[in-house]
Image (tube, rainbow over all chains, first blue to last red; front, side, top):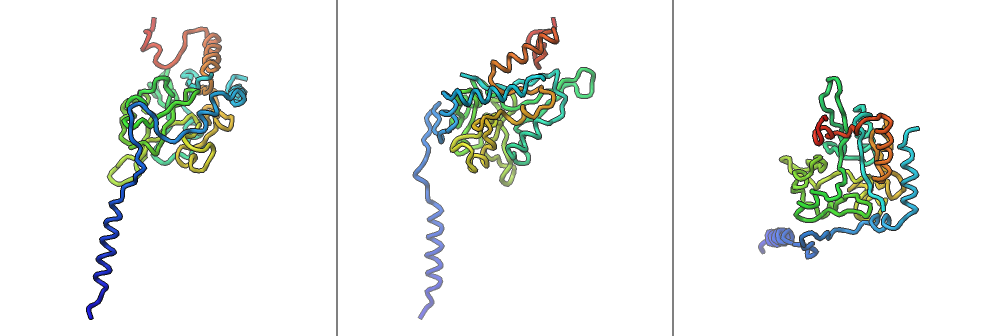
Length: 66
Length: 195
């Protein structure tokens, strides 16, 4: 009886090779001038947050001459 | 609404590189990447001038205009940020930027470029604020914590100012009035002449 090992190795190699051909379906389709990346939590946070702005402006006083 | 800006007072900068060190320390910037650097003109000659340069968070950012994958976005406060997951490391932004701000780490063999890295005004990047992932990709998010960029806060001579553009302009105007001369902003004489 012939050994099955070479066959198994061949199948495993072909499977491995083919798995490398996998392409993710989650592709970001480009549209000129449109940002399609992950959203930034800071963008919304800064826009209407007077508290954060006050905090930053207060902090800015540290850059004034004593 | 504020517009966040940097301004470096060339009459005060003493080329100590404290801003560069503060930036590297706060953001754990990888080796070979310089988000901020100090440029000295006429080094060693009388009247030499130094300025600290990084991304100036342009109002109409040329890097964003040329990016083929549109990985840049601007916050409501005018901070120009980018998404490293979209960046393809093409280097167009580097050619477009007049300040040489975009940096590319050589992460692979044959000097191949990695994802672009630049000053974020210590405002991190996309994703959850203050997360480990954000820190690893973009560095510290000090703005979300109510702090200003580390480079400006660390400046010993207060040459480098960062914050709301109106406040920055007020401080600089006061200084110029005290010096009783025209603004010594770098490039002024090139643009408007000596007279």
